[in-house]
Image 1: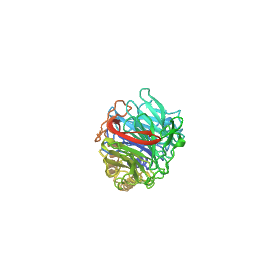
Image 2: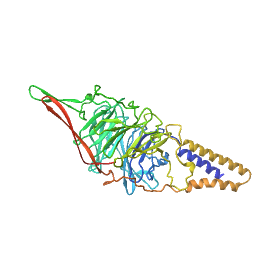
Image 3: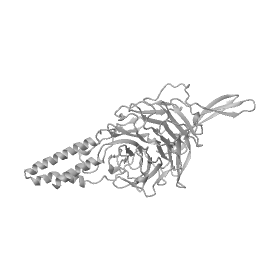
Image 4: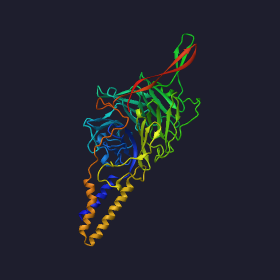
Amino acid sequence: MASHLKLLALTSLLIQNFRSVVAGSIAAWLTELGPPQIIMQDDATGKIFYSLCNSNGSTPIFPASTSASFEFDPIYAPRNGTSLAGTGWVEDDVNVAAMWFQREDGQLVFHLWKCNATGQFNLYDFFSRRTIGSNQSVHPRTGIMAVNLGPIPGYRVYYQDESKEISILAYTPATSTWDTQDKVSRDAIEGFPISAGFIDANRVTVVTPRDESNIEISKQQQDGTWVIATLPTPLKEIRNLTGGGDEFTIVVLSEPTNDTNPTDFKLDTNATVDWSLEAWDGGAGGIGLTMDDDSTRNIYYIGNDSMLHCLTEMPDGTWQKSPRQDERTWPPADVPNAQFATASDFRGNEVFIYYVSNGQIAQLHQSAKYKWDAANPLPKYNNTVVGESDSDKGLSVGTKAGIGVGVSVGCLALILLAAYASIRRKRRRGDEKQNESQVEPVTSAENKSPPPQLIYYEMPAQEYSHEAPSYHGVQEMPIEEHTSEIRIDRGREERTSTSHNGPAEATS
């Protein structure tokens, strides 16, 4: 009888831990000790799941179970449907994660977590959780994006305020405070997803959906000003009037900036535009920004056709659609306008993209410039662990757009129940000893298998420097710096552009 109870208990445990979940907001970032780190909210429960922080190899281990979910104090718990942002570093030879989200009252929350020996995240310390920007207005559906500009500049968190203008919260390491900076853009955009990247700490780029036809791109200049542009339809230039004497006034045209009045952001409908965003309706659930080793920017989105799309910036500053990959490397998402996450290393032109495809979180990987490997689903356990059977491998298709493991669990439960029935028949024949010998290997393998080992893996072409626990190191790369000037000659306007190459700092 004890063996029967063990068998039923094991079946119940498997069903509880490996149920189907529905994918919500997702974020990813690179790590030094292994593959990218993934966090994702389960829309059904509001829990935030993570990939094991001691994953090794090139693919994260994503259990999709409560054993790998963050435990929040109710005061700081995330609201269901929050946007997620994260980054990390290494401390004491283990991964530390910094994450941001929105709680039920709309406030932004900052959390720190540290990886333990079994691959789970524990709270860094009692003081490593707090609300930030408590005196600022935050849109109840804001997107959130965070970057670490290095030990001295610190974190920058981008979000939408109640007017849907993109705002900035900055962490200053010297004072350990979060302060509000000037806006990125005062244009009241319609979309909520935000992505950002930088080529040095003073030249961040922020992208977001603008409307049903366009994407907005904000580029920070060396003087701190943000220049705003849209594609494919450009914004109208701003007319600035300056004194030219008693007899005339000089009109100077300039691109919109973060100082431009919200009512002056208007599309230039007279501009010649011979292309449009494919499968774009402004409702994208996510947007991604990556950069190449030559500072080329790339924008990703999943369209209303459920396919991944990419736009690439040309050397002259214009944008064009990149060739679509086949479904072996860019599989279709399970839902249109799906949420997704990107993580990239510009120095090796390496890009990772994660979204739900065929009921599983798929990893898309660009291993070199223009070279995409076959997409793979994230496994639920480390295949180097002793004692795991083939029947436990992989994630099966769920009944909802999420991480489906219910099918394999159901099959396993049926197998175990069949074994239970077989044992009862044999007991009726009086073969008690044989019953015990057949049940024991199942419970023995479950109870005695060692936990995943902490195996460190060094990702190719990655070099990092971490001068302080809370900040990502700064790396050096050449960039192309653009400046523009307006020259007025006898009442005429002329715009000229110059460029030069010079050293700049960047981070992955």
